[in-house]
Image 1 (tube, rainbow, N blue to C red):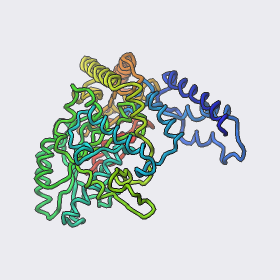
Image 2: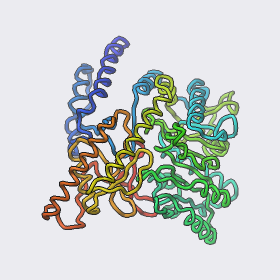
Image 3: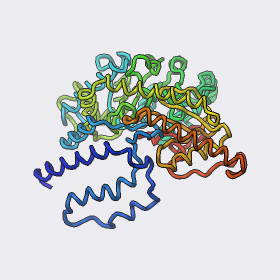
Image 4: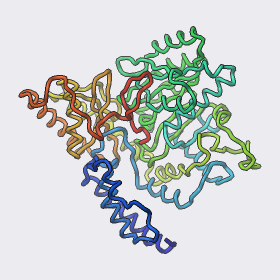
Length: 506
């Protein structure tokens, strides 16, 4: 492919993408492909000679698209959103065209400094305190995901504790039973044995119980262990519960722990001043992360991580081999020292294009619509004779279940997802199966939320009728889980509690 062919076929591909997004609603939300079906449809070996671009587009339509679950579908109510936007798609094209690897300032000054500015723009828009600013001792970086942000925080907290004289084998960390599964993975990758992460029970709202954490810290100290890290969640995956940051900050200060906050989905809600409660207590934390690639629409992958002490972060992650040396070292930001890998994409362009071409107010308007529709959805559930709320809605997430019990809820999730008309996620809250209805796709309109609820209400009523005549099996008998319905992440939670979570990379 030469430049002329790129121009010609590139225009056609933009048309293909635009048409796909315009017509995404005509597809079933969840792929109906069977295991191995896509694999079998592809040739066993790579071509030796060029194929026509028309054939590539044809195979996209014939093989790839039917094998997709359509995350941009307006009736995608599962997991958390992974919104795309036209502005961000254009930025991805520029990123690919430039081919920049911005691991150091010297490798492309614009990549580094634009990222610094985007972190500052977002800090101001979100209302985060000045201690996370480059003008003070903190700063921001764009990671690939909140999972990587958690891993970076674990490593930084570990190295700070060791530098202060702690014995590595005595280090222990804490998170709630509802914390994201990536917390456990981060501890494992950072070299900790499973017992080094302590799962703290939650309160009735499914938030971390600060009193139980206080007790756990006392027990750890008496056992000769060194608490070095607490990971809090502002908006858990299963229910959008918010851990009490003020109380956790007090305990972190008392025990010399690093306090990291995972606000992967809910953090961007702070763009709306009326939702700034999502930042309550953030002024005293050591690091805070949120994902613009979820609810905001900055195109995966784009995750913001802010730290109050950038020196603590870079001390843990810096590598300075001779082949990376530059005369500017020490006077500029080298983002390779803020992350695990060396190489890094020019992610800042996605935020720059999104904010310039659409504006922050358009994002706020979308967030407000979703929150309003979720509240309205909750009122419909309240009025339904077969469904009930597990919790009052938090932001854009409604957690509900069938009044007939766990087996009926499981069957409802399975039946609704099998229709292809909408997609929901099953989780477990308080040991009870729960259906998550997340209103977050950029393309969603009120009519899609209304149709999604109508689907659930109809299936719930029909299921109740079948059970009344014994057609659905014995009470308490759970329906089998099919593909696309299972746990949110399928991972063991800290402490072995299996509640699931997002493919949170999404």
